[in-house]
Image (cartoon, rainbow, N blue to C red; front, top):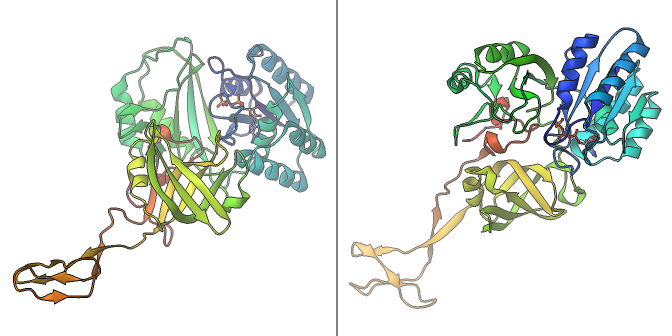
Length: 415
Ligand code: ATP
């Protein structure tokens, strides 16, 4: 039976993955549980917009009772934003699988409604349980429907004490990263040295290590030395780091909260606004949009600042709070505009100077004149390729460049 669960946590307490880990122990699972990240731009999320799916076998009534009892016991009902949802599906035929896959594709990339989730759930014969406004059924259903043509793994360690600070031998994390990167990723922000495997707050997660295989995340965890009691660990299969949320779109097709890949030309040069954010205009045949590299994207902004009018680029990201602003996760420079500067000719061993407006050049020594205006191509301080935000500013779903397989015509440029 497929069990989808979402929206049980609050900003400070609980984590739906912890509930999944407890249920895995209680019910046993046929496969590794899935941790599915959904649209990172939606306003309802508490943190990373994650939902879980378990595949379990056994007495159906007992499974359902156990899951619902545990959600009742652990979900943070008093929190305004917490609206749990649970979905049970006993069997899926190929047509139902396709419907659910399509629903997942929308939920990971666009804004969907609770009514839409209910309709889809009913059409595949799912049993769903809504708590409070029940928004969680969106994530619960999408987690069951998730297709994972590309997948990654995360080992999550849960701690016995729920204090804010984490006790760990910090050097062991750097050693682990050195030994396992790039098969594990997003451990450390190399620009700042900040360790990224810890979530903030009091929730039960001690740390999470992400990687390309189950064995590498197990190996990485074995290298880390926690200095406090760890209650349990659980490995999840995930869509993290796979770009599952990105769809090629035209600017005119973008709706609020959409995730997308746009292809266009720089139409307004980058400018820095208060707070250190960089904005520039991108145009395609259907319209124009403002692209933003916010301050937390750190050195990525230095690349964005160097874009010039006419540069052809692909931008990866989405629309969040501001409807006409596209938040950048990465960019790919396809073609750099050629830039020229006037280049004065030389005479008598030095540069000729302007002879007046529209009158060409004049040699100050011998008086010789030159009419033609010569242009010199300026070398651009940018190369074609991909550029990404640093790991500390990265979305859970964003594929790090280090995971991108080089294909023909696809260079990862410099990071
Ligand atoms: P986590 O802490 O588990 O990483 P989160 O706490 O950030 O995730 P949730 O608590 O799961 O986020 O809250 C997100 C809510 O938004 C859930 O109710 C989920 O069903 C809903 N949701 C997910 N994707 C969409 C979407 N595309 N459109 C609308 N609602 C969505």
